[in-house]
Image (cartoon, chains in turn blue, brown):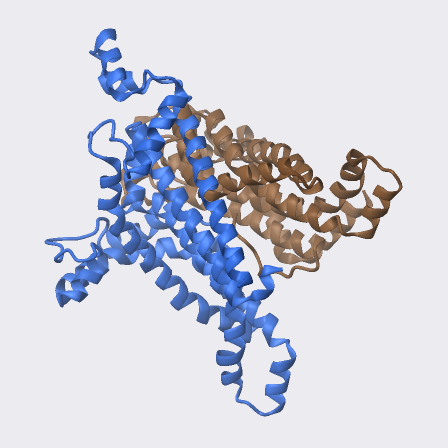
Length: 334
Length: 287
């Protein structure tokens, strides 16, 4: 019950946070020195034409009115239109969403499947050469510029060895559209050939995206296991003659994962942020790539749409993590 | 003075943290003495199309770029930009973030709630996303990059100082100072601030690394200083057209970023172990 009240309180904060975010992004996008209308109209437009366009885009009204209009649209799921393509931004974002989700989930899978075992091994073999090697790798993960890592992987695996595709999401026809995620759709329709192509395109970007997150998970798992390994129940189990692997992989890991679960939730947000750069490097047709293109084109409506989208996802994930945590570990409610 | 000597001695004992310190000192050394260390100090501006895209050799240590300029010399001058951006952006974040955190943590009223909610909004979006939006809005230039990074990094300090201040308030020495009639200002500046300085120092070191990475990302996306500024992130993005032949063009600036950020992270980890024995190495958060 207490958890539910707390969860509800957190939900209440959700709305003002999102509204605040929109107001801040809106103000930022409107205090620009350059005139977006003049940019859209082109160099050859006369001043009169620019003013007509300005009125058409609703940019001649005072700022608070514009903001109100924007909120009105948002409530109906309308994020405005791209200044360049004139397509609806919400439709553009939705269309690109599966690609980004696919990439993020793949990176998350790599992070968990590799990160947790490596963290446990590193804790069991504490201060061994293996632990030291893993520590160097994890510290590097947080220090390396992910776009550079991506380019270096492209250089080695795609350009030099030719083992994996350089960029893009697919070669040939994509599978039938079910979820929009090519690898998953190919599996669902049983097209193993298409799956192999899609998976090979996914490998390098997912690995690049996962690398910094992997570092965090390994470190947290290692610290968690070491922490739990010192508790009394482990001493007891050892005294009772439980086999060491059972103690570590079953009892210790289960308790150590509480903090890691929280981290994994937060990682989802961090990975989504990473897609902005990684999608640009690998020419992955997702939302991050869309954002960078809008930035290059000075498409203010699109930039706003993306920022709000990213903020909402981030807030929702943090909220979910908070709520899940109060259920996993009720002490947190105190 | 005594404490800083103690910290320095401890740092010398921790080999890994000391390595971090050496990397940072190396960066500062390169930045300060760039004109003397550089083999072609003029190559920040000069072009020599004849020497275009030459591989590394005795004459051009890290090879040459698309303009025929010496990459080694350009990286040395890039160190200046890196330091400039990181120091000003993190410094500004400190100046904005720490006082807000202190005030919001010390007082318990609607105003502190408001301050924390505003910082929550900034933390709600990944820093790089907000920084990209701001830097693009203001137009590509070095001051705008610094501004974008400062505006988006201060809430990290506010969060930290706020939490520390709140937990310090239950300490007896704070309660007794208040009971003795010390003004809020006195309590905050003389009693709370010195006690939150350790986590601030640790966060500053890690924040420097983080800011350098974000700044490089902005440069890579074309939002940094315009060419021919030898900004490391921009150098990597320029090099992409000439891969895989000119591998050195991309490798050298990336390596420079890696070593510097590594330096700040290692130092931050080491400082955390020394200044805050409660938290062991390995429990590092992001940001």
